Image (tube, rainbow, N blue to C red):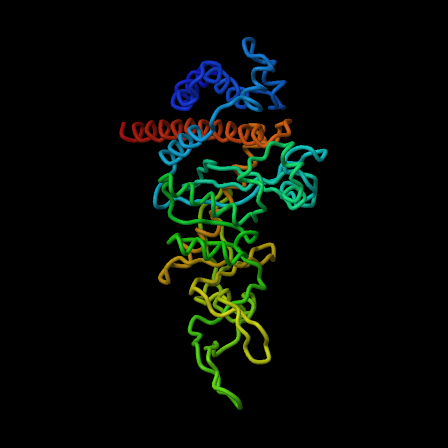
Length: 408
């Protein structure tokens, strides 16, 4: 069985390997990826090299950490393969981030910050992730390191870690995510809707950037996010004295999203079948205008954000009692079940993060450099795409055999 997957891997990696050019690199790439996929609790370089007779630790370490080669052709091939596997107009492009717990302070990007895997602040590296998914099949496209202020304010520290000049400018996670969406979109990867949690959805520039690009999106938001009724009108205020007012103001005040939904109609909605039956929760959805337009002084209320894009405001009441809120620019005639399905499709990227860590050693890299970390994450994503290709192929064979048996 092991021989079968290794032969499949060799065939599947052929276009990746051909892009590497040098013979040594063409040997190291399959060896590294096979090490990630193969047995073993630790997927760092030393234990992986120890399992291969003709590949030394020094050669494998040089390939990942110091070798001079361009990762862009491998990334382009990964995206091509991912699109062939799960790309379509019905696919999701999911934005998220994942934390890699790390000791010390010298590994690139490491700092005390929130670690989602631990549910608390911890010393870790944070990777902004982009996942392409269709149905329940995710393929990871991109993992980019977020640099906290403690790094971007210290040029000498970035120099020691080999951070490229183009990445030494401070960027927020939403800004990094938009840059990755642009790269994926320019490469021709097919998807129908961008999904993100409230860590990205609360950013008005992030939502507006997606809309400006003509992309559909559905994102989480905090319940305090201000919105206007969909029928809000802009009027000239009546001046009691002095000069006539020169700017329009909204004819109603913005209120918190959770307040706006208090009087909405809630209904039980099921979005897909899980292992224990249909998954469902109570949802409500109304059309609103987001209060994320230009700020303007409105009477005694001070500076207020003007009405922005008209979108869906969606609320979710979970059986646990937890309440969540979302915005989406999906069309006004979108059924609530489809809205719920889009919102809940984001969970699949968390499964991908978990599998990359538990099965392929995403968080096992022991180097300190920017280049080494990003090459390691690229190798784990290629390994993951290969495993997904095998799983889909096996599922197709199983489905075909079932049809044949039924016909017989």
